[in-house]
Image 1 (spheres, helix red, strand yellow):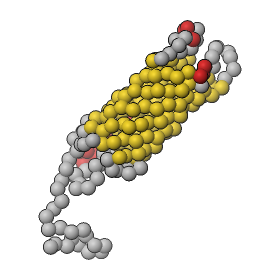
Image 2: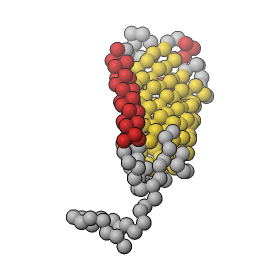
Image 3: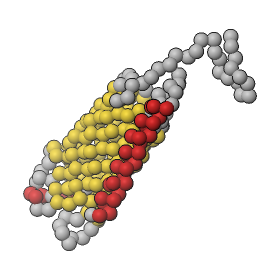
Length: 212
């Protein structure tokens, strides 16, 4: 349990460092005519997951925050609760955070990520519960509708909960769950647009600006 808490705090530490970095970049950097720069966004959506434990399909809700000092590199933190379509009162709640990389900056923005943290499970009829270190590589696609709103078209995660036990003192094994999510995100900091200067062309290598 102590190891789980240390790893969870490390992930959320990265999360908070990204918040600070975004704030400093927003305050110090001059706005550019090209590129969206750093941003902070929050989102929520629905999830559907396949559980290895009992071969279950559980649905639920998820919330996430993306902290990006640049458009490409950032940190994502998410909370997911899978409590729909459950049977025998089996459910899971995960608290994960980790690095996230966008592939290119267009309106269709694919990304990859590797999150880690804690997965909390309630087992059949409240017989047992436990919290296990969980890591989750994943990938997805965001579609930017404008300066503020984006649609999370799809998000796929492959979750592995390590040293999973169905009862105290029972055998340990890795539990694998995987699933998809979709939802909507809102950018919190405004996007500053600066028009290109009139009578200005790209600077050639080794030379100054060229005027018309």
